[in-house]
Image (cartoon, rainbow, N blue to C red):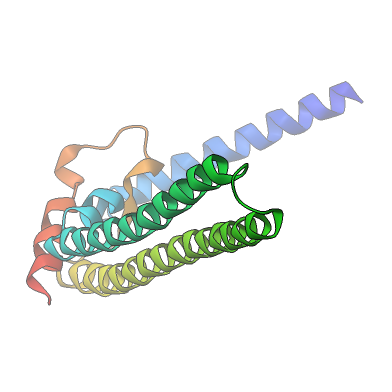
Length: 174
């Protein structure tokens, strides 16, 4: 059983070597490039502006949440300080009001997270759509046979990197 597995592994390895050997012979005829997609997208002016808008929205939501959290904290302090001096019915009403505020806080927090996530997703989808169009046009105009994402390679000659060209094209297309 183990010998069969070893033989299969050897045959698969030999097949892979043959395929890669043939591919390298053909690759000499191909025009190949690579791109760091993350850098290309995150370096554009449009993406930077989008991140600033996202940060501003996040800051606004944090400020709103902090204001409500401060109200809750103040209400809890008042409740503790007045619990002995105020009737049980009044204390119960205040506790109920505080519980409602806590529920509202949790809902607001969840809504803020969902809104920020949705906005980031919209921004990413728009960027990727534009990126795909620019990459296709760039590849065709510059007669590339293949443009691969950077993380696929262990080593690639920096002359094959098209990231800078793509950033310029993405910034020029509004």
